[in-house]
Length: 411
Ligand code: ATP
Ligand code: MG
Image 1 (cartoon, rainbow, N blue to C red):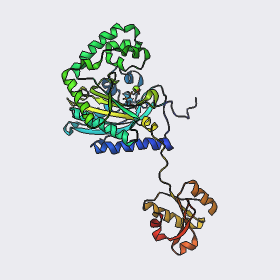
Image 2 (image 1 turned 90 degrees about the horizontal axis):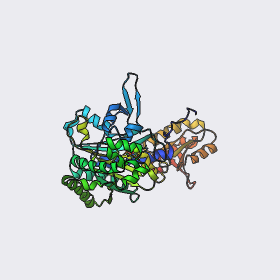
Image 3 (image 1 turned 45 degrees about the vertical axis):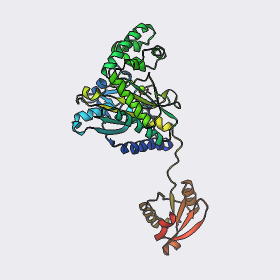
Image 4 (image 1 turned 90 degrees about the vertical axis):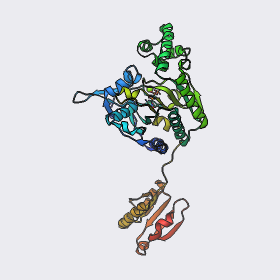
């Protein structure tokens, strides 16, 4: 295979596709900044430990999907497969415990060795948020509301549903795990090999399996809701009530668990039916144990991340930005005059194209091809009197105007 092509599962983004991902990122920034989140940038690679220990060593990401490599100094490093572990690592290593509550957003490429398909890439972009040091259900409501507003602002209301579930606190989780293990043991023969292994090490993960045989078993597994203790039930009820108050429609999905070890209480996904099996465009949850596990003390956390390319696929076409003004010298003799006029227009805020060659007819054809809305034609006779010609390229009308009032006229 030729090496002069992009690696499987990676893409060159340009034109329409890039305009769409850019819009997703811009709108996300606008929305989350309104809620008081500030951007943080962490390295694209970390010590492998940061992910291996904290995402759980039986998770799909850690067992199958990480891009690990040894650097020249013999350190084991990993290209980040997700954002939360790096942010929490930064929180701990920069000693940011004085700054709580802390609202952070991040964006950038993530890397996972997965089977590429529509909406599933090996390098993809996530935009995510983390709220550290807020342990109340109001925080969960606020984060879900923020995600919802973001998708609304993208014009996706009606195409995306909020699904959520509660995994409860540690006590509820242990109680559930026990019931689940009993059930899975009874159905041991029907499980996939992976899930047979998970059964011993991390049975909850079986609920998240994408294998058909596992899904069939999971269908009748005990429900998480039946194992929640009073504290956890109360917490979840408050989250749902908050969403009701804000008029955010949701669906409680008893089967929803998240693939990583660190979640507790609320987990949620925003799901569309437009992308087939890759329908989850945004996902998140509460991870109250993670910061402590990473050595940062007992700090509650909650966050979400969205797949920027997946969201971009749902957007309608975005035309190129506003059409330019073309500055066209009638001949090479007028190039320098045209150069100055073009620059002044740019300083006045116009989008300007220039730099044509050939006779005036050829130059005008090029201006048309650039989809210019108007041409500023710079000729020696008019210029001597401090004037240029404006030609409206939509209706062909021409007008001689003073160079001094050119910007005014073009508006
Ligand atoms: P999935 O179940 O689709 O594999 P996930 O649970 O692995 O998703 P998260 O780790 O929660 O995904 O990542 C958050 C979001 O990032 C996902 O909801 C999705 O929109 C996006 N995402 C995850 N993996 C990929 C990928 N390989 N290519 C493109 N987008 C992705
Ligand atoms: Mg995945």
